[in-house]
Amino acid sequence: MVDPSTAGVIATVSNGDIADGISAVDAAEKASAAWKATSPRRRSDVLMRCFHLVLEQAEWLAQLITVENGKALADARSEVAYAAEFFRWYAEEAVRAPGEFGSAPSGANQIIVNHEPIGIAVLVTPWNFPAAMATRKIAPALAAGCTCILKPAAETPLTALAIGEIMRQAGVPAGVVNIVTTKKAGPVVGAMLHDKRVRKLSFTGSTGVGRTLLREAADQVVSCSMELGGNAPFIVFDDADLETAVAGAMVAKMRNGGEACTAANRFYVQKGILADFTRRFAEEMAALKVGPGLVPSTQLGPLITEAAVAKVERLVDDAVAKGARLVTGGSRLNGDGFYYPPTVLADVSPDAEILGEEIFGPVAPIIAFETEDEVVQMANDTEYGLVSYVFSGDLKRALAVAGRLESGMVGINRGVVSDAAAPFGGMKQSGLGREGSHHGMLEYLETKYIAASW
Image (cartoon, rainbow, N blue to C red; front, top):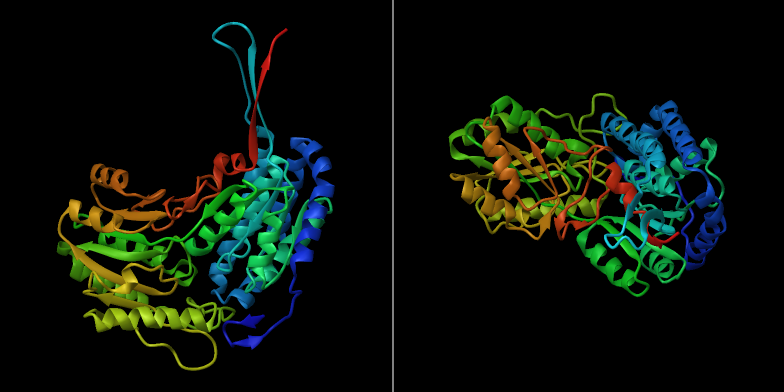
């Protein structure tokens, strides 16, 4: 494992293989019946203890996240609070599993609808939010009565192992949550998906990998939840409050240093406010302090790997070659670690690669527009549909535009939409299913209908 701020090795962990994956399924199966039979109230109590223990160890967890992920400590602290919230939310949801009872229209029988645990779940999480993405999947699975196997990203296994230890301290029984660390993700996850005991896959990551996993899961008809890539449009109308729009842009773009599927990827600004927005936004971006995440003054840490820096550099260079103007940033920083400065691009050409790819870095391309119809067409011109942002002083227009945008989530006059109480997920090739809210627990429940006469 490498510290992104120095490129130096910080730890080594087990590189699991297929046998380890199947052993984890064995352990999950052994624990499955007892956990399924555990009362919802007991499951709730265990999850609430997890919530409190995460908060008690919040600073230590935040520092661990920063060391292996690189993000600024302030970002890591926010992630820990967000991660803990999933434990609290699903502690409360565990005792609210839905059910229905009614009479058949013919009067011949009663209709009973129950929901029961779907079974063993394989959970595959990314490196950008190593704590929150783990708890967002583990908590609803456990609330529903499922056992699970977590396969964390190879770049950030330490946070997953720390979460596992906290859950052990909270009283989660052995075998209910199993963690497999590996760099052989494809073969290991594939083997688990072809084990007939596995009935659920929840994956957060790229659309390309998601397509591969969907094909793997099809062989055993495994239920899939997929939170995939994004290419979020950030739309600013002339009547938007400039201060609110710039503040929202900073959050939407720079949360987690831009390494987020929800990060604003394309900034569409109406011409009447274009010059002022670009100037103010670039000033805010240029003022960010870049450095190692553990340094208190740091506001932007390094990217996760050298490959991530190279990708961002390629996208910026391509945009400039096609006529974009660098307003601030645009050149990688010298020294150890994987750093790239906050960058704003103006006059970006429609054929620039940066508008079609998920940037996953601190770069904001700005494109001018004139009409509502024009910007909606540009915003929807992507295979992705995870989240969009709309800034306007006219709520009626903002809601109308939100209704026309092809995305699973829309933020109006705010730069963050994530909330444990809200259904997180996308349209088109940004995924299947939802995480968070009551919908998140339903992903781990099967519906059973019973026709009863007496």
